[in-house]
Length: 270
Image (cartoon, rainbow, N blue to C red; front, top):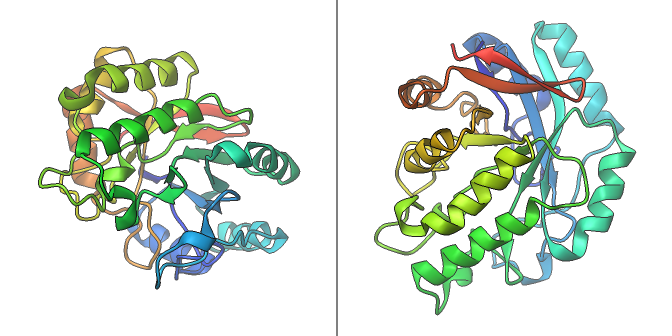
């Protein structure tokens, strides 16, 4: 089955496509399982954001679930009402309450914030070498894996590379082997899904995490992966699906993991 497990609509502050628009495009592309994963960033440092960056206000309401139900009936495809929970130390309590309050079918655990700044902002890297910046980010991801709330997948592990100012942006296994092994081992132990995110920005490479990390994950026994375009605008859903599908199959993966009724199920990589 063709799937896309990471997408944003106008229920996220940085997205432009509506639920109806992405559902129509997914139907056209033959995507059978679509997860909408709006931003839940309750600890986001909006007061520190650079000029021109959006304020990450939380926009999900009951209308979100209503629009998804309407689109499912209209287009006849499976659409999961999901959320992308941005981890910060000081927001875990509020995040846990929100995740318990609403019936989210799928939850991505993502890290965007390190030392009080979004890694996407150029200011995050000021005065830091690549080793320092990436090691801090990986440590934050590792800490997020022990979040005291339910999540199903670990999102865009390697997010920090998208805007990084270094000559070689990609976060590879060889450079951070011990730290990455720690993260991957915990993901496997906790039976979480490792997301293969096809939105690489300016970092280069085919996907996030890098293929070298996916190879290591497979070698350690990891088999639960899915694919997400991280689309925010019409025309990005399903981005690079075929190329990434071929790449992960060359590593040895044969199935995508999807979440239905709170349980992980698998679908053959189409």
